[in-house]
Length: 617
Image 1 (cartoon, rainbow, N blue to C red):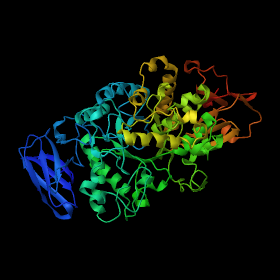
Image 2 (cartoon, rainbow, N blue to C red):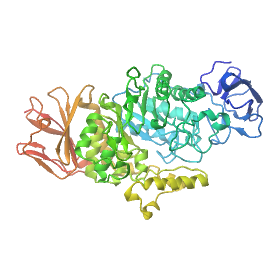
Image 3 (cartoon, rainbow, N blue to C red):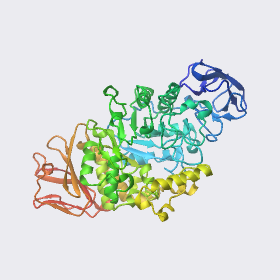
């Protein structure tokens, strides 16, 4: 057998193309090449079939015929589906692309600012080429890496990407595979990393041909809310594990990606001796060949073990999404703690604790689930928590896809944007957040009519969990995910960017502070305190004399006198605190900021955040 890069799929090799599939329930497998030969694949041990087919080259389209049946099927490990998931697969030669990023070293675990984008709605064109033209804007903003929502081939003409069915094939909707490579290459040239959201917990409901090859792909002992989970720990699970672990390495190797975001790892069930997420993270780093690779996990139960080193019993991922911080901020901004925000008050203590400890729930009872949530995470440094005020799920779950700027006052949003971007976690912005986009981000998925109807009803049913969205007249406004207008309305309007410059300037200035200020150097200690029912402070102990203080007040103007809180004492050698930055600066749409630390006590402006340093006279 020729030397292959990956265990399955079609690979260009000397003499032709080598095809290999795992189909343990089949006795014969043939490859049918359009305008080319039909060849029988030879059986191998373990249910594999393979053959070198001479005369076939990159660009050829093909399908497999199983046990001589009249129907044919695309390759589960297809590198490209030019006609969608039901059509023929296409041979791709990854070596044909000429990379220019040879000196790129990857992205480190610390110092990142992420930007989540959906390639189909990030620009009006919805292509990799158009998205690449906007990369300089992200660099100017202060972003260090983009996180791209899933791109594995899925059915229909638009979708979020979480219903992928051919996980080695970047969807045809945004361009050719080399267009994706070119996007990554241009990002690296601009100084931006790129990580990809991958879904290893389920296949989508349409275009999924895995059962035709191997029902053992799916587990009969675990369940998910989205479909059958994968078989990572049952009989014949070895090739299934190999398939997904290889996929993690594939994106790093063939697309030069800088890491992966692992979707819903709480639905990646595996009772094996080694958790498959551990193997996935390890393989991604091996594929980097010395380049720094960043792996972040979404985990709803907040299992901190994922982010611990493997030698300490963890899975070795770099970071975890911090939904707790988002939920507390969302309640603080909107004053509503309904639905899955039930267990949050949005008060200063929650915001201080989220900054200091990451997860708020580390084993306490959680009413929304009626069970305990989380486990101890005190050992994880703050940068191992990815923090955000918006992401794709949270915007869409507002029912009408409203942005957070449409759910609160400008002053509160500016203040909590400062909390996010001057906080100790690893911040992430969602596309358009930097200019307070007014375009919604709705749930969209172009399924066939029967499935689309079920998805629409399911969406309405999910939103009933929120009291304010459960009324019939509200549910009637829930956009049909399969309607083309739902997708079109979710596209960013880049003309807003110039018209909403105060928000863009706010985000740009805050990220400039984050880059330059000594408070964000490694090893700086953080503490925090509540100073009123609506206000709190975070103190960064830089070196004893150059400390920083972030003061956040989500209520009305506040006067503190007396001030029996040591975190408010000026640093050694300083006579008071002076403002270096304020969310109430007029250029951001604010009303100006008077001195905060005065001889008449502390005067903290309402709905504002102020960044302070010690003053020496």
